Image (cartoon, rainbow over all chains, first blue to last red; front, side, top):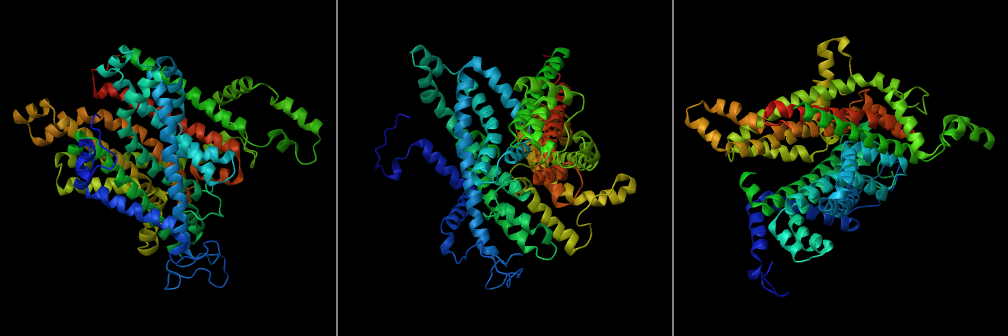
Length: 294
Length: 313
């Protein structure tokens, strides 16, 4: 913490922690593969219109259910829409939902967890509520919340976030409970540091690493939950192509046009795999003790 | 030990009250006025108000929560908007396939995953270990319905070995029943196997580094005996915990699996209810599933006493 690197410092003067992080990444080629795949997916989502796609919503009666060909790489669906274009645009929904849920639930969970872990009087009440919420399987809770509102990407994000927050709170709280017994916290209290000061300056840095890892895993599971919601008709509206609702639409045609389901399914699995590989790599990099075993 | 059990029971009841409160709040926040739905299109405001009083919808939130909870405790989960049948009856009709599917998956997956994890830990660093771990990452990443379709396309459509979808009662013969459960169980159980195998491996690696394992090996016990009697039993607590926690995956997965394989279970009931906006069914199902989840985890916690006799709170 005391190494003061100037902003323009060369790579040779990275802090030991950062070096260890990079080394661990080199030791784990799978994490690197995950990162590369994920970058490709993000690129696909961002540059979709320039990747040889057409309007993913363009309906055409004459080209209904054409199998994959040179003109339609992934074939066309029952409304004649180009599956390749829809898969490319579908990446946006998955990535946005995954990223937004990961960010929101870690931030909200961090705030609640820090405060409840440190302020003991709040703890019992908040944790009972969190235990209750965690007893409802997250997909079901998200389904229930989606049933209350209309289908939209924003509502999907909110519903999944609410279902994931208790898990973050639980983890942050347990880390805070361990950390608060450490001598440096006692020292900070004795030195008269205010409560927000203790939380932000002394506890937060000890929680960031595991939180980052958990955030990555949440990103992956949020993508799966979004796809499940869309698949059973409680997720993104049909007007927005997402991998989940593409598979839902192809459901009745699986025996005659399996490509309708296999392409979005493959991309969904690949993206989640990339995120999970990245998560595993980060976990190993940030926790050398675990790195030996896993 | 009695004190431990009593304490766990009390906290379980607390959790269930919170769950009930959340589920009721969802019901309370549901858009639309149930009284207006019941009264029909040609009802006057006066009629609607009368039904409001009749159903107790004009009572304050907590009073309504109390009477709702009272009804739930007596097995009354409300009435389906679409079919006008009691929700508890609808759930009872559909529960058999869901229990068959989840229970089969739970048992088979656990029996498969624990040995996988043990072997991976015992052979840590070898290709076997890496294979188990790779499978585990894949299992976490491929969503249950994607896997389900790959299985259907391979084993039902291409090879024609197993039925594409549907469900048979156990009464129709064990083989028919099993045939219809094989693919759904594999689809549903893969992520569960991944989870448990990974946890078993991590926990075993922790235990295998302990002194008493070395002592057991040093005094000449057969390696398998060390692995199972000394290591596995001590590594069991995190594993059974994950077996319990993972039931949430099975429940969520069952909703999807039943949709893909057209199994007439509770999951299918839920999805139909979503499409029809039949809120009482959705809420009833969430309550039942959550209660099952909580009870299973209570049993898991109580099983700690068996694995670790030191637990005597």
